[in-house]
Structures are given as structure tokens and as C-alpha cells.
Image (cartoon, rainbow, N blue to C red; front, side, top):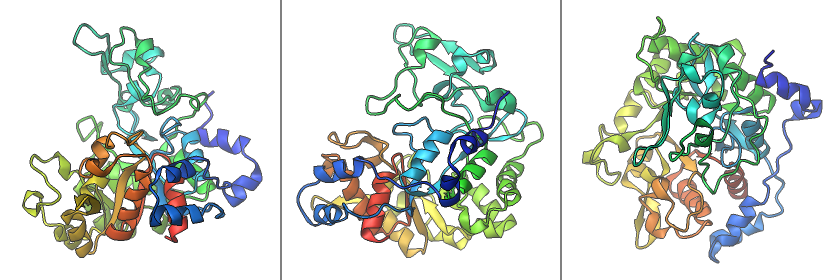
Length: 401
């Protein structure tokens, strides 16, 4: 019989951990990144904190746990993030066929984040595995909405990956980026949303669930978008979690406005995740390319806004500085959270998508700290999502954030 992820955790962790929270340990990565920094004030400041006592920080927000090395949205990934001092942990929320809320980055990602294609549930996939053929890559699509909760809980999570050259479903399980790892994937455990609430509470952390856009048409079996948004909040209320400890997120502005109107205590900290970058011609330096003036969100009651970090940054005289978008968001009185640090691997080649507006000055791994410094000191962000929270925690505590 399946045992829930939280039951497994509580059965194996010592009672002292559950009573006091995890022992915080930054590990070797912050020091490694500091060593990569050029000599200067930032490096000296960060080196001066080498002897600090590691501590939890709400500025440090885990992104799907600690998926740089652990399978995302698993018990183990989130325990690792809490042990790195992330004060706020994330469950991306979607739903199953029987309308149970579970933690997955997308409703249709099971083919890359679990073993479903090599399990007895492969036949439930909306797009069965198709092998690579010449220039046509291998493909599949598997959804939580095609599984009951009981079926979902039989799956084994893995690192998010797919080998698009594969000719078998087993080979398709590979493709892990060479800067990630499979060393910490064995015996990982999936979570329901309710599991995540119990786990995060036991770890002494706060909560930032994201209501993911459904891959199915809504209403789904009579379950409306409003029902979906409400059910997320109801699970925190049922668990006795104070609204002040929850930052509910959505890319759908209507979800955020629903919470503001119908659950005002939770709505006060609801986070609008910005996807303006999907608009053709969008330029964070050009307000005429934005869908709405940023002040209009504040006028609708939105208090927290969260763009990808590149929207907040530009370069000037070879230095990273706040973008016009960042300046106007701050002027509108919006609290800014950003994503996602440490999701780009080594930075010698410019950092890819997450650093696209500052790629010309991103030339070494230590730039993770340089980006953090501009975001915190010049943009004034109140939190940063990270795939390896130790880096952000170290910085926040060193700088007294």
C-alpha cells in the first residue's frame, strides 16, 4: 500500500528535527562561487561572512525544492532546500482526474518528471511515446488529469529530462543536463499539495504554492477555474496555516484577482507571475511594449509581482543596473519577487534565457552573486527563487536581508 510522502518523512526523521527545524548547512557551493568572483568589494564582503552561523532566510525561496541535484517537487528536494536555509518552499499545484491537488510543475509533465512511460500507466498518456525518426524527435505527453490520485502516487519521480533522440521509452528517460545530476534521485517521493503543506510546516518553512494553468479545458468534470483557485486556499485553511505565511502565485491575473476579492487575507500576499515576455516585441526598457502600465496592477489590489530576473536588469557602461521595468514596478509600490537563480548551469557562456538582457557581462559562475547583489541592493527585490537555495541564503544572511 502506498504511504504518503509526509508519512515516510515523519517516520524517518528524528523528533528533534521536527521540533526545531532542520540544521542549516550551506555546503561548498557558495564558497565555490565566491572564489570565482573578481577581487572587489562584493567578494571581500562575501568572504568576510565565511564564518557566519547558517540560518534560514525568507529572502531565499526554493524553486521546486532543490532541483539542481534533486528531482523537483519531491519530499527529498524540499528537505534539501530547507536544509540550505530556504525560508519559503514552493509547490506548483495541478490536479488529478479525481480533482486531487498535487505538486507538479505542469499538468502535462509526467513523461519527463516520472517513470510513467516505463510503467503500467503508459497507456494513460494522451500522447503515447513515439520514437525518434530521422529529423523527427521522440515525443510523448502524459497528464496528471488522466490519472486518479492513487495512480499518480504509484509513479516514481526522476530528474526532469527527456532524450529526444531516443528510440525506446526507456532511453527517453535520459537526457539529464550535464550540469545536473542523478546521484540523488533514488527513492524520491511525490507529494500531494496537502502533503507539501504538512511537510513544509514540519520543516519550519513558509509556503508559496503556484496555481498552474490546466492542460485541459475548464471546467473539467464540473471543476471550474474558480473552484480550482479556491481549493488551493481551502487546503491551507484546513491545515490551520495563517494567511501571512502563504504567498499564492499564478500567471493568470484572474486567479490573483479572485483571491484578492474572495480570500482577501490570502489575496494580500498573492503573487502575479509576469509573462509579458510572451508578447511579441516586449522590451523591459520600453513601456510602450508593455500590456499595461505597472501602476494598474497595484490599482487592482495586486501587491506582489514576479517577473523572470532578466526583465529586471539591463546594462549601462558595462555594468548591470535596474531596467526601466524594475524602476516603474518599484515606483508603483509593488513588492518584487524574481525567478530563477541557478537554473542555467555554468555561466561562462552568458547564462542563457534567464540572463538574456545582461549576457554580455555574465562570464563566470561568480556572476550569480553579482546578479543577486544588483537585484537586492539596486532593484530592491524582496525574494529570489533558486534551484539551489544555499547561494541565496548565504548572500541574504551575509547582507543582513
